[in-house]
Image (spheres, one colour):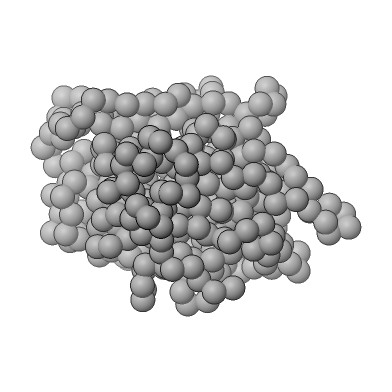
Length: 349
């Protein structure tokens, strides 16, 4: 399948959403289709399920796009807008715990299968996944979307999709990322079709809306960060790559969790205005797209998404990564979410 060139700006982007709130933010928000119609979405699912899920088993984690150097600092971050948050929701089945974290799978510009981490987040139609924007766009040669893009929550190691497979339909991200590769805007929201599961005869059966099946994490924007009230975050993802010293503590085959304090960062690389850091031993490959959840409740398995891992750093040069890095969730990124949160998808069966 040919990769889709980016649909930029007002005319080609947000006119597809028919969401009045999104249209007001057209200057900041870019929207692009991941597939052109249901047959292409079916083809994406078939690609990953073929031969007993062979491509799911052989896909490799996407490498880190930035050489991140710097340190966490105590400088305050005071938001320019008022705090905004949306509450999480549990799965409809009361006896099922949330399974919001998963992997996003795609074929990149190198025509090879890859994956990143991702998470189900709150939206009107219960169909939204958050991940790093560079896990949706192929930034090697041009701002084009990757193809055969799907989300699989709680992926098993045997190439199956225990909670369904959800084909991506539309992606929303910030203009500055698609045009300038700005790390401060490296967050994407992807609307997915209703999930499908393969029947014994190989046909696909509709599973349901993503958020109804696995739950949805909440979201929080414009939270103050300072030395006295530095917020804590729980990170959930699938790290797989090595530390700089070559050690490999993670396999990428199971969901990992780390917890640490969020702070501002002082980076010498990459060029960015407002990336934030968190104490975390996650390695880069595989953990890109990991969810940063604040106010996380263990008994509920739910919290508020307030960061997405876009890279990791070894700040003390001991050969071990110790810091995850995310864009600060401000009003600019909220405008991207607001546009995506009202976009309807539908079914592929």
